[in-house]
Length: 282
Image 1 (spheres, rainbow, N blue to C red):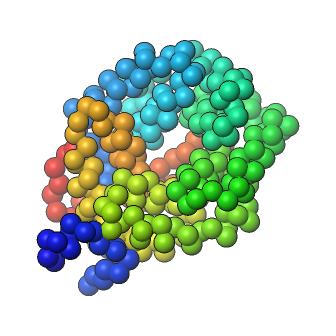
Image 2 (image 1 turned 45 degrees about the vertical axis):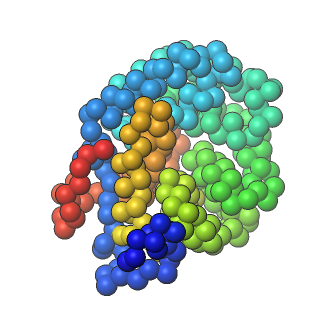
């Protein structure tokens, strides 16, 4: 392929391969591919965020980074440095009218509560009037007709909290196929972090249709992994964590949403590695 074609970017949906994308897909698993040095950098970044943002907007920029790290390495979540009084930060945020006028922040706080304080989240689920209030606000937000990249992000966040309710919305069903035009619009611009983000959100919202997402193929996988490897500056650690989490979702065997968890089920490492070229750890 000519170099000038690569520089301009490629419409990944138009590429064809000798083998089905499902067999050729390059996988990512943090248990194999995430270096200890990078994990230490992620933890240090979270500690800095918490110290810097504690009491400032009730941690609204801290919790998304925290949940990304949790989803990336849930079995090592005890290393993330969360504290019991983080629930107070969540409750204060939910009680702040200046923040709650932004509906997506509801999902930010309740997702953190669900993952880190499942007992508190269970108590929330027992309050049917509060559940309806939160779910209705998230539904109204999705019905506003926002542009694609905002819609898929908001829908994925809402799905983690109320999977069946959100997936059954007419607007969610009707906008499913818009993902194809969006991914093919950004791939020529080499926006591979955004590509991974939207593809992962699609899998959360429409798990039964994920294998139909032909844009996620060997070609796009290699470019996403290459982009991840370039996020090596200390200032890029938040972006690195988010993209690595998205690649984990894309390479998972399954994703499961329960009342107290969002579980990313990975294939066995041996089956991932079989037939794939050796990759350096990021």
